[in-house]
Length: 404
Ligand code: NAD
Ligand code: USQ
Image 1 (tube, rainbow, N blue to C red):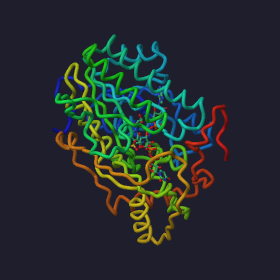
Image 2: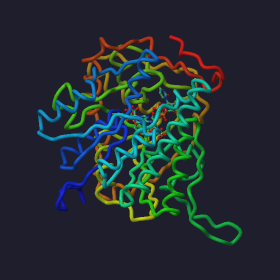
Image 3: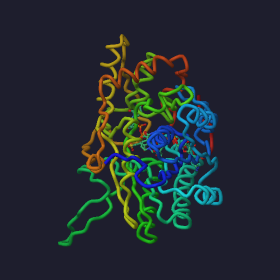
C-alpha cells in the first residue's frame, strides 16, 4: 500500500507544518519526490533557539529559501513556502485558503523536553506554542478544509513508562463488571511531553465534535541524518543536533564517540524508549497520508521500530566505534531528569507495519555511516554544549539564559 500520490487526476497536496526542522525537512523532500504537491509552513523559530542558546547543528544547513531553490534546480519540483507562526490564526488561515491541502502534516512544535524545563517562561512558551498552534490548525481545518486529513506528530512519551504493556492509543478495560475501550492513560514527564498529551485530547475532541479526520503519530526517538533526498546535495543537508538541549540519545552518542567525549548515559541507563531511523519517519508519514483516517476518526499509531535502553545504545556505539578505530568510553552522568531508570517497557507498534512499513532496523552499517558522518563534521562540534545543562529539579521560575 505504498503511496504514489498520483492516483487521482491532480497530485495530492500536503502542507508540511514545521517543514524546516529535522523530521519536517526530510519529509517535505520525500513527499515532493513521491509526486505530492508540497507546501512548507514554518516560522523558523528552531533556528532562533540556536541563536538564543548559542547552539548549532553538527551539519551546516542552508537557509530554507536556498534549500527549496536547490531542490527545484535538481528535480524541477516546486515546494511552496509560507513563513509564519501557526499561533497567528490569520496567517494560518491564509495559508490554508491559498494552498487548499488534502493533508496537513504537523511537525511545527517546540520539541525539546529539556528546553521546556529550563524555566517558567520556556515551559509556558512550549505549551502555548504547541497547544495553541495545534488548536489553530484544527480550527483552520474546520473553517477552510473540512476534508483535510490531519497527520499530527505526537510522542511515545505521552504514555510514560507504565508497568504494563503500552497499547496503540487505546486500552480495553473491565471495571466493576463493565467493559469499555478508553484512551490509554497518559503519564508524561516534561512540560514538552505534556503539551503533546494536551494536543491529543484536543484533536480527539474535535474529531468527535466536528468530524475532523486525524492520525496521531506517537513517534519514538528519531536517529540518523541522511535520507535519499537530503543526500542529493549539501544544500539539502538536514540538521543534526548533538547538544544537551536539542540533541537526542543515539545521535548524541555518535557525535560524542566521534570527538572522543565519554558517552553521557544518564543515571543507571535502564531508561528504555522506542527508536526509529529518520528514513522510517518519512515512510510512516507517507503511509499515514496515503491511507487517511475516515471523517470523525481519531487514529493513534505508535511510530517506532525497535526498543533500546540507553545502556544498550551506549554498548552498540562503543562496538561500532571500535571497528572504526575509535576508543569509546561511557560515563554515568547524574540524571538531570526525573524519570524511572529501571522499568518495564513493552510498547505495541503494529499498525504502521500493517499498512506496509518496511523498517530500517538499527544495523552496524547505519551506525558506521552515522559515526563516519559525525567524524566528517567533528571540527564543528562545540564540546562545551555536550553535557546536560537543564535540571528537572532545579527548574528556575525566573527567566534566565542557559549557562555555558
Ligand atoms: P524541529 O525543532 O527540528 O522542527 C520543528 C519545526 O517546527 C522547526 O522548523 C520550527 O521552526 C517549526 N515551528 C515550531 N513552532 C512553530 C510555530 N508556532 N509556527 C510555525 N513553525 C513552527 O523538531 P523535529 O525533531 O523535526 O520534530 C518534529 C516533530 O516531531 C515535533 O512535533 C516533535 O515533537 C516530533 N517528534 C520528534 C522526535 C525526534 O526525535 N526528533 C521524536 C518524536 C516526535
Ligand atoms: N538520555 C541519556 N543520555 C543523553 C540523552 C538522553 O541517557 O545524553 C536519556 C534520557 O534521560 C531519556 C532517553 O535517553 O531517558 C531519551 O532522551 P532523548 O533526549 O533522546 O529523547 P526525549 O527527551 O524523550 O525527546 C525526544 C525528542 C522529542 C520526542 C521524544 C520521543 O526530542 O521531540 O517526543 O524523543 S519519546 O522519547 O518516545 O517520548
